[in-house]
Length: 174
Length: 180
Image: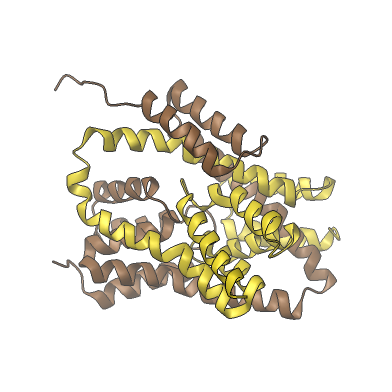
């Protein structure tokens, strides 16, 4: 139990480190660790948890709380959440106060240009991972396409798109 | 040191923590701090956003920490971060409890699958939108495509993929002597 809690904390600390370019980029590695490696939850539950985190306000990496809760109840949720948000937040606070000086260094600008495409590539991989688990037949593919089109028009807020997907899934007996 | 009182920082950030649903969560911070209140200038916001993309950790909470630090020093950073994470954490904890303890009725399970599929469409469009504005030039496109291929279809461990592409990308984008 203690060993598994330590593994849980360590895993989410690690996942927070590789959140380059937003939480979505960490999704492939998160699935690999929490589903395939440590079996804290099934692939189906993981996708449901990510969808719930999209329906929840705040950062989508709150999915850590969902996984932690499944693995070890309240303590697991607390530990996974702290590991995900606290160390990186501390680092950010420290660096943010020095950033004005650091920015004058030419490599700071280069690093920013270098990391942007890596972040985007990782986000695309996150889309791929979620798509493999969440789109498995004709109706689910249609819901994904319709949701994408609805969002693309910018007429519908994201939360409305996600909820409408739920209604369609219910109607289609997905 | 601090520009804005702590309790005002906490209230404004907590409101964002409670209402920022869906994609483009930076937009909520931008709207509240730059557009509506002029607490932060646009260029300061862009600097903090860039910083959070470089640093490890979830970008949205890190951005709240960085902006909180700008507005209220160390305490601003602490309360800014807590205020955007905690409300959602409590909501998701309650939802997790319902999901695992009560379980889903068959109807709800179908609905969850529908939301899961809709999320795929959502993240696809959000990623494509960011890529179309932020990917400039063949170097950036190559690095993004290589990263995707490694982590996505080829199932290479993310850390290994990052270790492979970061040196290549840094070299491609290395500082060049500018006529200044």
